[in-house]
Image 1 (tube, rainbow, N blue to C red):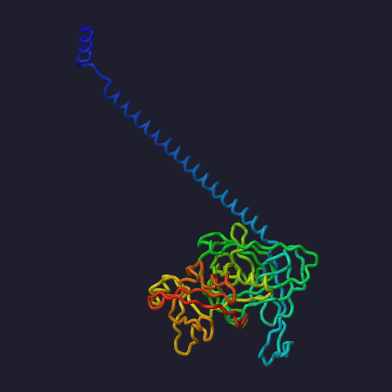
Image 2: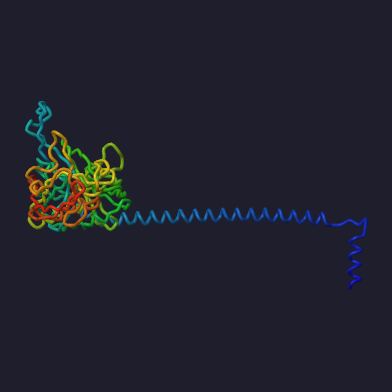
Length: 405
């Protein structure tokens, strides 16, 4: 064995004999390069395939989500649609136009026609809509059901006052003509969060019945100045939504994805796109109960003008609390924020007070003073928890009935 090994070594070390070492190294290096290139190419191709597959799967997932959402919106619209009516009105409006007679109407008034939307509340034909849909001077009201049936005999049975921040009215169908109505399901507007999906249904532009638009809740506790004909209304504690709300949608429902009415479409920002406002349904439930039980619109009345506090507003007014209903101090020449002779005035509520609780319920963006009071009745005594100059004060107040309602 040793000889073979020695002989082998001698052969490999003989001078003048060529060797394959360099060639072997070159071939080995070339092979490594080829393998690396092939591996890199295959890895890139495989990665590309995986990326394409991932993108395809992502696109497919998005399509599934969109398809499911479209089906859900369609399902909700079909469910709620029969509970939505178009409201058509004829009204007499006074005019000071000295040339009125030249245009075919007297100076005492002109005939105008309008259209809006309403929400069926019960099978007997009680309908909820906006006050400005059936303004003062309305002489004739009819409603069109989702199947196209027109019910002519409709009466306005309740309307909040023109200066009331709650833009609400109630209609009663007096002859159903054998039709069976489908009442809407009312939800809990306090449960809505910013970013949640909503659907608006209404008589868009007064021409297109049961138009459906979608969006989200963009904010809550909004206050706006809204034009209604020749007048301007101050509206408080509204949902803001980017669901398209057009002329004619007023009085229609804003619903969640469960098909529950969580708001009443009321206004749209005229100087921007996709900003609409709706009254939270919780703010209206007290009035609905009042109409159903007494046949009258009895609005509990506290007698204050207030600003719903946020962090920014509290900082602006240099307040020690950042949530509640702030009763601002009126400037010279302005009416007092505490209505003279009203329930709050009689109980000792003052300008500059912040109402933080009513009967232990905190006042904030989701539970405003209006929404909490909507569950009360005129004559009820409520306990106001007030922050006055940084000190806690408790004041009992007997609620009145809104004098203009």
